[in-house]
Image (cartoon, rainbow, N blue to C red; front, side, top):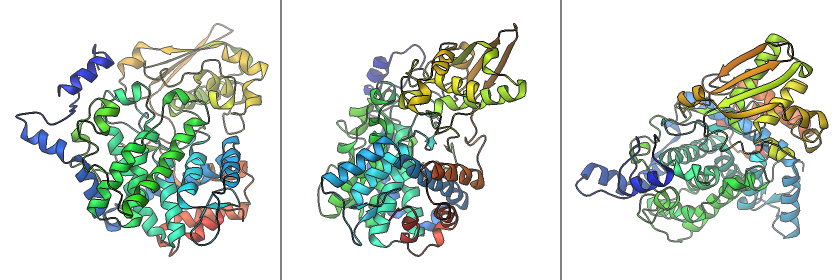
Length: 503
């Protein structure tokens, strides 16, 4: 964004002037092309949801989506044993929100069922509970790579919950999920970066549109009601990054999933809403972002699919995605140079200036804060050679050895990483050893990113680890892997959701 301040960007957005980015707040006089783009955005999104059919999904998109779906199910299982999962189940039970029968959907990892909206809420929270879920990547140079949305947590739970209550096929779930992910990601790509930089959590704010799209596809809404569903969803959009490192971050994903179901259900009953909610002067983009790029949406929905380009990253560690390139490189250096914790005097971790803006916990006191602590992530790898679900536990974070190692980790801005651009997560490591040597490394991408993808079998290994963490029966877990492998061939998705239930 050059020397322009965030507020300057906002002002430029209102004037239709981009800081190296074509932001528009509303149609500009004398620009017919831009005016048409701006005025049609919500309709373009609705038409994409309405007109996309299963044969429109490229085979490669289906295979990439399959991996993210399996990943999401595994994370819903591991998330079910988090404290947040326990609280949600208690909440649903104590308030009478659970139900039984054919109109109830599975709360993954538990024996209870609930109406679709509440099952979607619980499962969205579960998928995001450990901050181990997939991440949309960015295109524009002024974006922060990996800081758009977590696409599966809002989009998958509505598809599964509604499909279960309506006895819908795996093929229809695959379509609804992909449509939801695509809408969510393109909206997140379009909104001005100010949206994220100044505190909104796009998984909640943009994720609700993906959830609404996924739910609306399964409801079979017509164009008018699709526009209403999007209008309702926009007024439900919420989530603030100040809550990172607390249970309320996964709440954003769960509430987005639930809100999408509510938006589609109300629209199906005739509830009305504005039909230009994205682009209107008082609509979502202007109110929440101060501007937007219509070129990120017009002609881009499914062209290419986000799963294809720039891609979606599957996490190798249960922490904020911005820690992952550095963690991948640290693990490589530890193994290559046989580094042990007692050899380390100091570690300098350098990134671009936007990454410390998200990794805000420099002296974490619990597992949730540790997920947004570069210092803890590096300390865990140095001390234990790993940083998995078991390491992000309160007891581990507060061990004296861990806290002492955290004090040796120095995290800040590096000019080389800054110059590499925000569309990378460039991380530069300098490990100073007590014998006087310095071991250095650099990584732009992590394992699991499109540049270094996981295979389906590698994702299955992660899934089985998450299932084991939840103490899920091995036979059920292995069957889930195989059911997702052939998801589009399932005549009724209830065969899959039954495997995700303790009942």
